[in-house]
Length: 321
Image 1 (tube, rainbow, N blue to C red):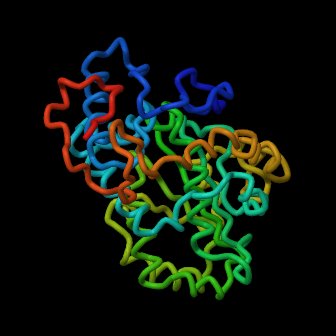
Image 2 (cartoon, helix red, strand yellow):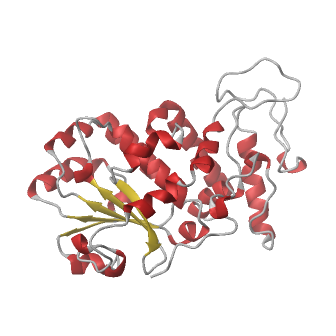
Image 3 (cartoon, rainbow, N blue to C red):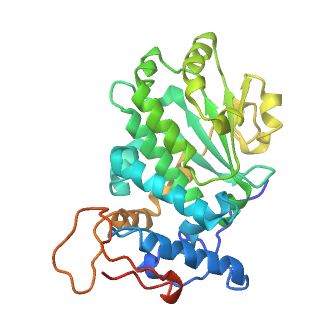
């Protein structure tokens, strides 16, 4: 199966991390494709002129949404704005602390991305619901894990192009988990999943039971049509699962030939070994410094004097009041 390759244009590849000022970085992707480069710049201008907050505008971030929206700039911008608003209304649902503080949570091996791809070149993202400690965890802990791992995967052009395959293991899931299925949690979680900038994503559910089928029946009607159509139930039929996720990248517990269990140390090092790169993302959403202005405005406030003509501005220059 395809290995995870370091992409030279990946914000996390080669340990280089994001540029010091990613929002003002020039276009480095698709320099040989003028139309795509133009659309990256156009979307960057829209984001920079959206409000006074420091928004992420590097090429890879913008390409997430452009890929997802078939390179339609207006749709990409609308999607980013919806995500900004959802994050500002529900900050605890998103990665918001130094990565080192998530070490214990990551090492519980509840959610993680394999370091190999499936036959279609997709990353495989595993969720083991039986590993959740409902006595000490909140639903936002799980949401933060999603955010961290997808941040890693979405910084790969191969993943933007091919997508992600999600393996959801329901074995050992406790009745206590039903407390997470509140209308508010389902609403926010579903909205966040819907706004994930990924065109191709599938969910493969294994080790289901009569009880879990009942829980799924509660949750299913509240999911979007897009998510519903991408869910497949395999129960404990490993041959069925292996038609989608090959046996050689799965351990014995999933009928695989890839060892007795997952190599969690190697898997988690994909994140813990890139702490600096993750921590630098925490600056986004804060107040942007503007020339000639000493009085700070509220977080995410609208710019009073927006630049009207984006095309006359350099892509690397933020709009100044």
